[in-house]
Amino acid sequence: MKIEFKKVPQIRKELLTEFNSVKIEGTFCRISPSLVKIDAVLKGNTEINCCRCGITEVIEVDEELRLLLSDGIYKGNEEEYLVIEVEDSLIDFDEIIESELNSIKSDYYICEECSQYGDNFEKEF
Image 1 (cartoon, one colour):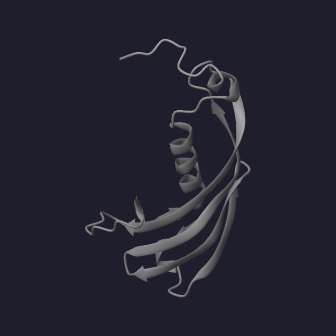
Image 2: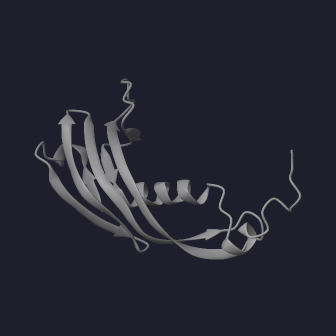
Image 3: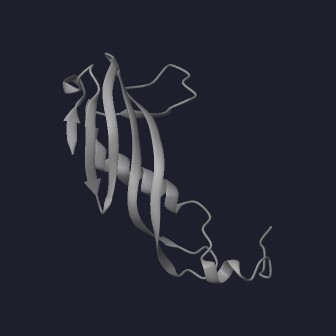
């Protein structure tokens, strides 16, 4: 789902969109001419690879999203929200979901079988 930055209402609007069996559910609104606030939850299932054995597993995603979308370069210092700079004044919620999933997939994940071995594996320093 895509929406132009200027068409985002100042009154909170319900947000529900899905991409690859993962959805964003919550609210969004414009809080200034160049900022949109999103308070939502990322829910669904995604595949992830074990860092030790490489096996692919499906995990459940349930992450709270507190985002500020900036139309152009952001010059503030918001600590509660993750800031995403939007290009071309177009908000692409599918791209946001994909970006958050890639962030989750880049974390160090160990499957149940490998976690039983504890620290009995070769470490690289």
